[in-house]
Image (cartoon, rainbow, N blue to C red):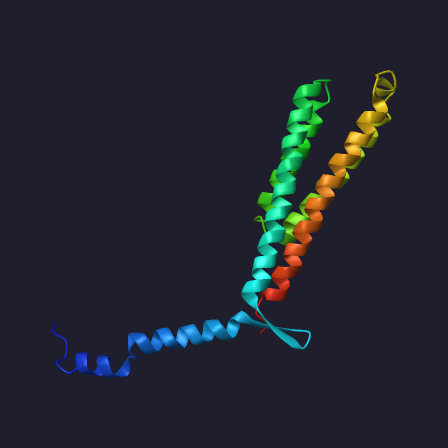
Length: 170
């Protein structure tokens, strides 16, 4: 089947040139980059950069807490290691279930911090811990790890807030 000889001319005149389409797309992207916040205009890219730094900080603190948890568990080797590895597993599973988005990661890290605190209380108040030397030091160590998970949650929350501020409003 042959196309009509004038079909090519019709398509050429009815479709916009590539340069005009590119310019229209660039203009629409530029319009979407501006976010109105509190009476002043800010570029969305600066908000996204702040979110990126907060997200990276939250991720770095979570990875630091995970690394230190593994390291102290291997060094200590007192029989409570499985529960600490489950804390890290909860953080990983929570991250995957939240698709590693900032708001979901903030909730995940808050949950892991609560788990860390409850685990610390359970181990510190166990009868077997009372007879071990350095029980008070272990309780302090649990508090430090809980603070690390909470710091990660706060940074992820800041990233989620910056993402909401940078999102284009309908």
